[in-house]
Length: 214
Image 1 (cartoon, one colour):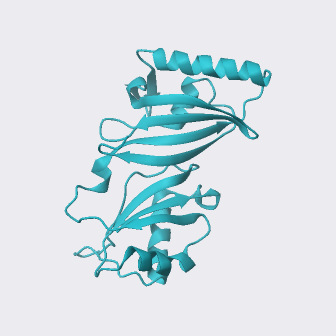
Image 2: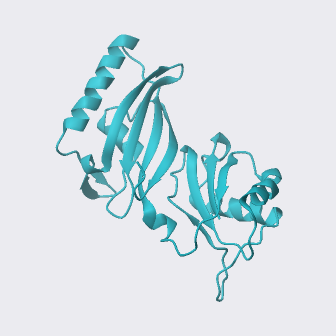
């Protein structure tokens, strides 16, 4: 069963490990017939496409679970709904073939919506300055950065970057960043490259892109 879910403000500061424990408790309370691995320490067969960094919200997390017996997506969602804790919402449920490649191996990129509360000059001036910074970043051949004492080039990890506009909470940026074995782009690193890392901001992952998704 493939579940697309949202992670809201109430759960954005819990770690990936704690999120998995929260889901396990929720499935048990809903009496979902989870399938378990064999061996000394059986674990439920749950796989998340891409862990979400602590502090981010999301409208497009994807998780696969294996069941001991078939349940229709409708009945599955109906049983689960009363047991969902605040901050977790199921957006869709569908059956997928068990023979498909692992969910993690299919992730290619992720789209983010980043709101920055940028103090300083007037709104019109901010807009022009922000657009110019985005243009310069996208035109750069390299963006050499350092993460955990390792040097890397951020530029190939940025597939697209754009200014969506101004809202009450600040300026909204859209980002499509690469995710996978060849490297994963992080919104906070893009903000740092734009000179906005120290400004108050909020990050929401909009969706994950798999395989040939556009």
